[in-house]
Length: 194
Image (tube, rainbow, N blue to C red; front, top):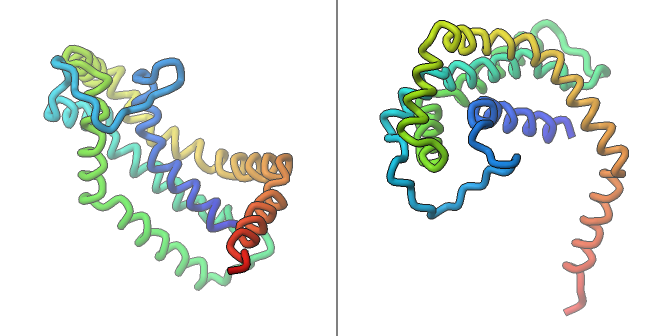
């Protein structure tokens, strides 16, 4: 269960910066991007969007979330698990290597390339010029530069809160029992006589 929770946080961490930046693009809380939708004629260019991603600091935000996640991973371990100093050092080294690989330049480049067509569906050239102008301003840059610090402050508080909330919701929905029922039903359908 702890591994599943850690995976959830990793996925959330990867999506977090984009969810923050893409919030204005959603319509009524629903932002669905059809796979083959044609780009509008006034869509922002890939070059404009790469400049936007640089100015709004998506890469810095992703790295900040990963750093915060890595430093908070030990909170996911049950209190009953006691680690020696060597084990703690080995865990820290492993986490550093893991998150370093996850945030490799190749991954970040692929991630930003994936964002371009999505942003093109939602933002015109004019929109992007205006957003770049704001984020290039002193106030915009202050926002960008403070975000990683804010994430580092929030993440250690958010992790235990989210973990507790998830446990409470799972208990409320009788999640484990329902999962057993689902898999038991699946086992029954696979065991039909031939």
